[in-house]
Length: 87
Image (cartoon, rainbow, N blue to C red; front, top):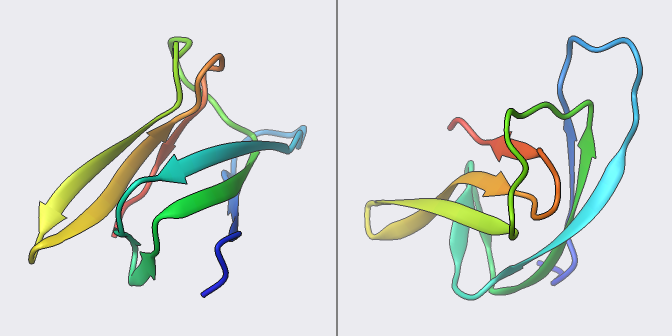
């Protein structure tokens, strides 16, 4: 798998589409759905994002299942963007 992975996420419901790209860094292997992401830098493209509060720093929230780290949420620093991943 390439170190750079573009995760295109589309959230339905808004009339205007305004895509933005953000960088995140994973320090350890993590699952995103059924895909294992290796540690490294990734770019995330977000379309039509909504959240209530602005995040101070970019962070990734994990859940451990079956001995593997599963990405649950990504909060994009300096924005109100919160990406939620349901498996």
